[in-house]
Image (cartoon, rainbow, N blue to C red; front, side):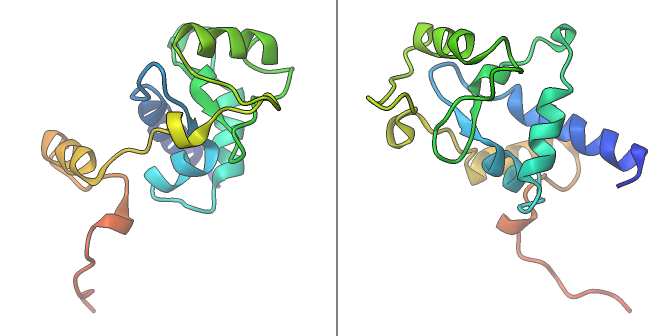
Length: 136
């Protein structure tokens, strides 16, 4: 991926992360799908590890597909991430994972359509929109 494309994709990821409500979490894979690149969960992880503290993003609300916290070398470590999430009311299972049935946030189609109207352009999730015929 070219640097300019990478930067645009990272900005898209950060815009999605900024919308995650307190008391909820989402996964790297969900963010990739919301950004219209369903196979890019690993890239979302790279983007998250590149976030500077200046962005003030709720990175602690991003977990893996099993509800496990980020590795200890990012976001201040697992204990810090867990503390932040618990302060927001996120419940953990006995094995230390987050109860995704209760706390998983997935942007709804109506939110995506609202973004399209506000930005005067196509949304980030192409999967929800029917694709018209292509011009040749």
